Amino acid sequence: MPDSGKISRRFFEERIAPNLGADRDDVAVGPKHGVDFGVLDIGDRALVAATDPVSVLPDLGFERAGRFAVGIVLADVAVSGISPSHLTVSFSLPPEMTDEEFGRLWDAVDAECRDLGVSIVTGHTARYPGASYPWVGAATAMAVGAHDDIVRPDGARPGDDLLVTKGPAVEAVGLLSTLFPDEVPLEGEALSTAQARLAEADCVRDAVAAAAAGEVTAMHDATEGGLLGALHEMSEAAGVRLAVDADAVPSRPGVETACEALEMDPWRATTSGTLLIAVDPVDTDAVVGALEARGTPVGVVGRVETGSGVIVDGADIEEPNGDSSWAAYERLLEASGAE
Image 1: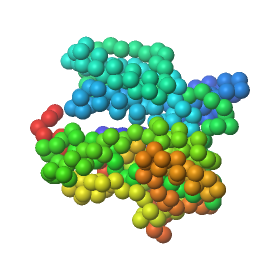
Image 2: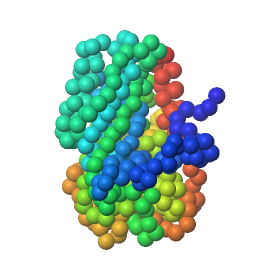
Image 3: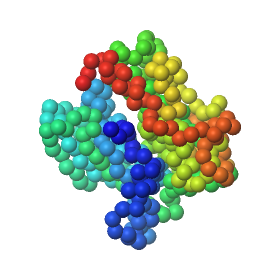
């Protein structure tokens, strides 16, 4: 049986990339493995678009689950440096989801979109036999702006500084400790500190603030495969080598303790909300200052170099095979007795 998660780079390059429908001149940035968004040329404007599954976790409460879901979808457009402006969403709801529950979810989606200036322009909503949580649909986020303002996914250049916000495993630790409070081997303050990380699993506002502060050349949201996966994806997209000092990478309270308790490698665990940013050294202080003004921890963790691959503390580190949070999730799910 194929592994869970994203399809492999090899399958993408062999079967997907050569077969992308009609070849149109208005596609300025098309699909590429590990790249967050595409770009269409609409006259003198650019339309940035990204599509993601919609994940709804009822145990978070439908209000919180709605805000979390829309943040994940909008993040892949926000890393273009252009503020998300439009959203389409299709819901394939489980039959057991009531109108009242969906209403609470939708109210949260609406509130977050209003706060970010995002308009929902079309969609589809229905219940279907076989549909089940958490994967209940898909959505496409869009942003409209000038071509020159786009932070390209393959834009990292040798000589750029490398920044990381928040650090590894923020999302994984926050989610697992919140969804399985009785099964996670943490108690008291250690548990509540881990659960608090879930509030940080959002990067839309950080991405827009960073791009506005200086010459950001590339940004990436560290999702599947975690921070290490994001490093490899940025390296591959730009054809560069990334050299990282592990001690300079931020680490949020409770993450290390929770990862040890869950036997989860933090650098290989999904961490939506954590940004990997390449920036011209002239503007590094300005970008760091803009993020810190938002209360976002950020570290200057290394440099972009000529070459390929990822070096951490002088050693070549291979691309992760999968995500370390999956095994932890499966163990906790089994321990909880849930199906």
